[in-house]
Length: 316
Image (cartoon, rainbow, N blue to C red; front, side):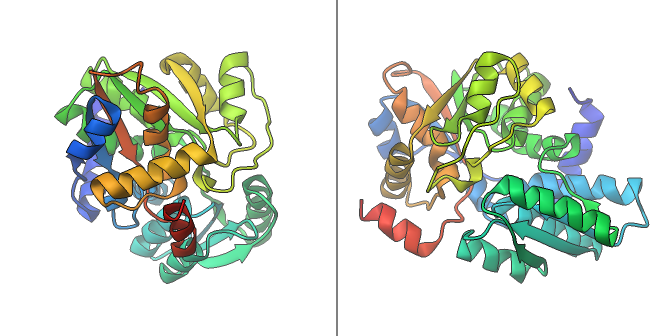
């Protein structure tokens, strides 16, 4: 998928910005699952989520591909936008981010704090993405996609960290637009790990699960109220190709299961997880009987949840 040199270049880029994140075992979580459990803490990056790795790597390549670029635009539900904002800020570029109406208040604030111009448009991510493309044409901006080889290459750095430290029997990987799970597959090849990969989608946004099973792109409505980082209506064709080739299965977790996982992470590890950030554990809890007594890997992909939302989740 990627040469060792290209992955090393991504690691060099990421580690100029921040150190590797920890992978940690938590006794209470292991008791809950009845297995040895390793949690990869991507909630400990400078923007509280894994996406920043891809943004840094993408912008490093963009500087080489298009040295005359002065401004970028992208669409997001939050963490990708923070990644774009931070990377653009480091290179002195302007960044415009389009989010759906009603997007996370605190994610919006975090993006603005990184200097982005924030525009609310459309009722879902797909509508925001289409508007971002129109802005690019109108103002001559570079469109930062939600899925790209350089994004995947950057995200693969956290999976390389993980598989270099431990190689569990299975890892549960949330699927939004696909960079995280494709990066997992790339790192598995790079490290020679034999770990099985199970993708996790929201039961209220099943486009990737349906497409995985049918072998073709299937658009599906999004109704999740909690896992906005997994609110994908239209899968990416390249990502789907990778997932069908590399991933063992794709399962779906409900908002209720995600909320349970958020509470479990807080109770057992005292880490805050956003909805999509807890989906990996939600998948592991759903399949706990299957993997009892084995070594399980989960990733806390992000902790950027609005305070009011988290309070409601904790209250049950």
